Structure formats: structure tokens, C-alpha cells
Length: 339
Image (cartoon, rainbow, N blue to C red; front, side):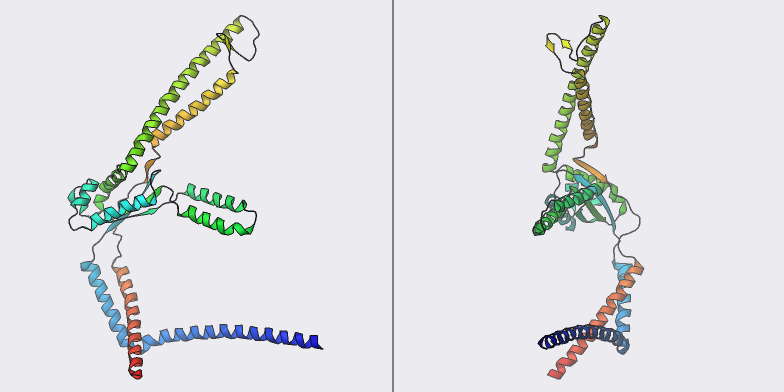
């Protein structure tokens, strides 16, 4: 008997909980509909205010688009360097923007080594870290390896922290954007910006030492290849001599009085050094420590909103202002009642 009472009380409690949940969602949906009805009713009851404010916004947007707004052109390039980091690039861009904001842009012209007429057309610079597709794949592989390496779920927070740190780190490539008042200056800007970043004291020294090390490595590898070529000629000549004398030899070749290892090792080492030489030549030619991945493109259409988009923005702003005006009038009437 007691068990039946206990079960019935549990069922009643569960039913009450479900009823409360149902009432909550019902009230939530009803309040949402009331809000929609209020939003619909306000413009109908205040047609005059809404019409005047929207018309005024359209006039202001038209006048601004036609007579006040200056057309600007925007383009981007991807610049990659092993010596870049987020702070270095952001600091350089901030300095350029400070010079671009000056009334007299001679400082910007001097820093970028540009004519004053070109510097006067520059509006703004910006830079954001750019992650290439190969880096994205590498990042995903690293995430998966980190997850698979965990023995239990307690270290999930540590994984998330490591992954977040990896994602924050820049991948040495940055997308640099520039806004100008004239698209014809973009070509000169690309050359000037690349030189600006390349000739900073921090980057320039590292490029020079890397280039010198590659040149010295190339010379050493070429010398090693020449020595191996001479050694291969000597080995071939020795085998020819042994063959002509019809003598059986072992796998070791005797040059002078010292035995030499298997000749196959000499040819294998030659291939290894040759591959290293080709990689060094490739690095000297491509200069991956500092390169322009994608340059500026000169666009003929301005990046700022056109007349149609400006009028659309004006209508939306006018509607928002009209709602605010009605809300302030209602609030004022409420305060008057309280007073």
C-alpha cells in the first residue's frame, strides 16, 4: 500500500514538472508573438514619424553618397617571412597608419620612399595573419595527434589550451591591405611595402646571414661532389684494371694501401649530396625566408558602398531611429505620469 502511494506521488511530481516545462515554452512563444505584434503595431500607429524620419535618412544618404563620400580603393597582398611575427607586423602597420593620418604625409613618403603625390593618396593600412592550406592541414593533424595521445578525458582541458595556443600563433604569412584614393598608385605601393618590411634592421640582417650561409653551403656541396666524382673515376679505373688482368676481387677496392668500403656507398652518398645541392639552389632562387605569395591587384571599382547600398543603409538606419524615437516618447509619457 505504501509503495503504491509512493509511486503515485512520483508520477504526480513528474507530471507537474512536465506541465511547468510546457507552460514555460507556451509563455515564451506567446511573448514572442506579442513582441512581433508590438513591432508591427508601432509603425502603423506612428506612420507620420516613421515616414518623415525614413525620408530624411534617404536624403542624407543620397547627399552623402553624391557629394561628401570619397571613393577609396582597397587591395590586399600576402607577404610571408620566417622572421615575421604578429607583434612586429602590427607595430609596423601602426606606424604607417600614424603617418598616413597626418595632414602632411611627407613622413609617410619618406619612410616608404614614395613621391608626395602617391603618399597623399594613401588612406589606411591593415594586416591580419594568413594561414595557408598546408598549415591548416598540419594544424588539423597535430590536433588529432594530441587527442589520440591522451589516455583519459581528464587531460581534455590541457588539449584545448594547447590547440588554442597553436591557433593563435601566426604562421609567418600576413595578408596586408591598403586603401587608397587612386587605384593607379597600387603598383608603386606594392614595391614600397615589400621594401619597407624587407629593409627593417631585424629582417634585413637575418636575410643576409641566411643568404650567405646558403651560398657557402652550395660551394661546399659542389666541392664535395667534385671529390666524389674523382673518387668514382678512380674506382671505375681500378675495376677496369682488375678486369683486364682477369683477377677476382672482393667487394672492397684497394687504392694505395688502404681498403675502401663498398663502392655502392660512394654512389649513394653522391645522390644524397646532389639532392642537398639541388635543395640549396632552390632555396637561393625562391628565397622562402621572405617572399611575396600574392601581390596587389589594381581594381577599377571603388570598395566603398555605392548609391544603392548607401540608400539601403539609410533606410535601415532610419527605421532604427524611428523606433528609438517612439520608445523615447513613450518613456517620456511614463515619466510624466510618475511626476
